[in-house]
Length: 176
Ligand code: 5GP
Ligand code: MG
Image (cartoon, rainbow, N blue to C red; front, side, top):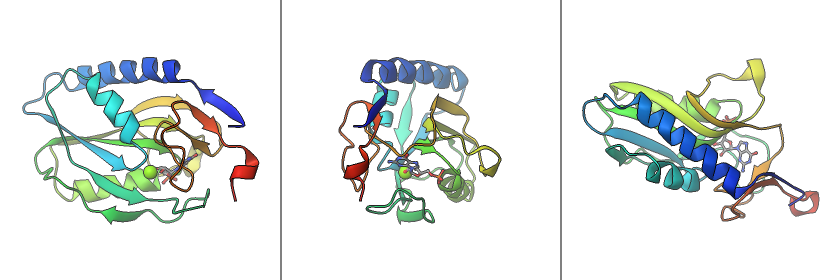
């Protein structure tokens, strides 16, 4: 890594705080909460988040690809795998790794809304400073981050580095 932005222990503390805020928000709902992790980048985040959340919950997965292969520029979000569960009438929380332009989150929320959920919110671990260009914001945000291409804690470059426990910026020569 060229730089480490967030270390493992700092991420753990913030994810626990997010889990508590989410649990408070949904404390009164009828039935379980349905989390929709956006694969693949959110896998580590969602694994830690749900274990810190004392709630009855279910998972429905969706796989969207925005940065295929060796690109560090966003393309059109493509649904690689459709939603695995039924979210009609359910309280739904979409979970993604990072929010930039918001096109990925907007496209997933659009697909879910077609199924008429009881409520729909979103949580992201990281948010980039896209400013006015962002088409949608998230309800729960872990950290605001500068406009670097980051990897680790689930986030990849060419499908690598997801298992790096911290979040960092790759050395320039590793991006080609
Ligand atoms: P958006 O659609 O909001 O512009 O981009 C969000 C998606 O792009 C995320 O789901 C994530 O997969 C990918 N993405 C955006 N920024 C980064 C980054 O810095 N690193 C990695 N690994 N993926 C990113
Ligand atoms: Mg993604």
